[in-house]
Every structure is written in C-alpha cells, then in structure tokens.
Image 1 (cartoon, helix red, strand yellow):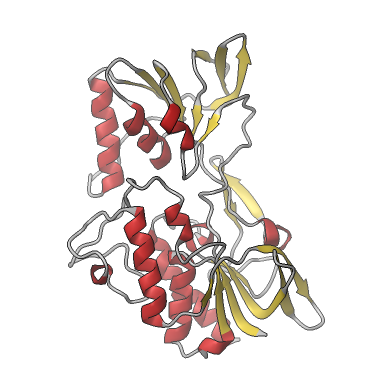
Image 2: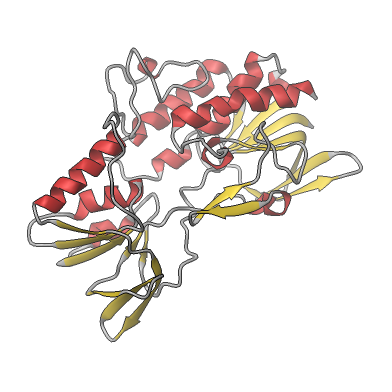
Length: 335
C-alpha cells in the first residue's frame, strides 16, 4: 500500500516525485511507474531530434526536480531526446526516486469503501494507493478523430519518413509537429503543401527554437520549397482512384497525389482512468477538467501532471509543467 503512485517517469511525473520528497514524504510510501525506462517517451523519437526548449547557465528551461541539466549535458542548449532521457535517469538516481520500470497499468478502479485506488497491471498483479498522479503523456496517442482514409498519422517515431520518396507531400497541421515534418521533407524537386487552420504567423519576439523553426518554414516558402495554405481547417480526407482529396470545413477541396501526413495534435493518454476525469475540446484540442491543484473534478485524489495536466493558460513545454509538482505535492500532503 502506497501513499502516492505516479504513473509516468517523464519530466512531469518526476517533477511531482521531487516535490513530494522535498516536502518530506517517506520514499517508501512513494512509487513511480513507467512502461519502459525512466523517460522512455523521449527514446520513442528519432535519434536526431532535439528539445525545442533551451538549457543554459542563466535559464535552464529543461531542468526538473532541482537537478541542473549541466550535470549530464553541459553547454548544450538544445540536447537530443536521447540525451534528455539520460538526464531523466540521472534525476532518478540523484534524487533517489523509487521508479519501477517496464510496468504497464491496464486499468484503475477506485474503492469508495476503503478510499483507495487499485491499479491492475499487465502482469496481472495489483498495486494500491491513497493518491494517484497520472503523468502518462500524450505524444504516443495521436488525434485520429478526423474522417481520413489511408493517411500517415504523425506520432513520435515517424517511421514513414524513412520510405518517403513522393514528389509531392501534403502536411496537415501548423503546430510544432507539422513544422518539424515540413523541415524534414522539404527539398529541391519536391512540392510540399502545408495546410494550416489559421494564419501562419510567428509569435513575437522570436526568442525560442520553435519560433525559429516557424521562421525557417516561412523562408522555405519564400524559396518555393513549401506552399503554406492558410485558413484551411480540414474536415475529412478521402481517396478516389489514386488521388487523395482534402475537404475543409467551409467546403473547399484540394488534391494530393500521395498520402497526406496528419499532424493535428494528440489525445491525453488516459484510457485506464478515463471514467474518472471530464474532458472538453478547445479549438479542436482535448483538455482535462481539473481544479487549481491539477486534480480531477470528478475524482478526489486523482491528479494529472506533465503535458496532460495543463490548466487553461499553461503551455505544453517542460518549463511550464515542471511547476505542477509543487501544487500537487502540497495538495496531497495537506490531506
């Protein structure tokens, strides 16, 4: 029986674990689970991908649990995802965080009589706790809600890029994932269409890597390598003979000679606890209904951390959700 179980040993889950330890929880009453190694999600990306947020001596946006990233990768402002996984593993060891790797949670039930959460694991064993923190991320569960036929769906590993030899590529989406795909596939002799749901404007000032990437894509457009089609919110995609047709919500239609790549976001990875939290959709993005402590409004004692624990004005970057650890820890220990 544990006081707190955290599902997900990424920066979100480890930030909560670090905050709980800072506030004096007995480490024997705390357990962090992950389906792979600590930071496994970062290993699911291609080896040459890097963090968009920066690490520096003056401002370390990738630091969590009070452990400087320079202890693992000094003087590297944008570490690779592989490097960052090594850093997260270092955080576990440095802070003595109890992590059980290679553990998959199949389902979760709440016992109202005993007021405990029961976690049913893939190996058919069970774990129980008084408080549950769900920090399982979202980047392995892409949004597939759109009516689309035979398209590539963008997610972390992007295996289709290895075999992509089309002369024309259509990318649907305008956020970081779509920008990264466009940068990866744009080259002389290939036509790249990028369909975005609104104006493709770079937020000012250009003070971080993801904004710099948007500038880079705009410059690719000026060079004729990318055709940015603005205000085209795709409603459905269908195939007729050998051609793909993309239909917008306002009735416009465009053609694509090859499979479009869909980069329209992700859903929170919450299936085992889905019945215990309310969801809502904002600008086609699924968010969770949480209180100011990142606790489910439907189930007391169930908290959400990391990217899926964002409140209304939080960003999806580590610098934002690493701060969730403090309010979650205080709320748990206050009880």
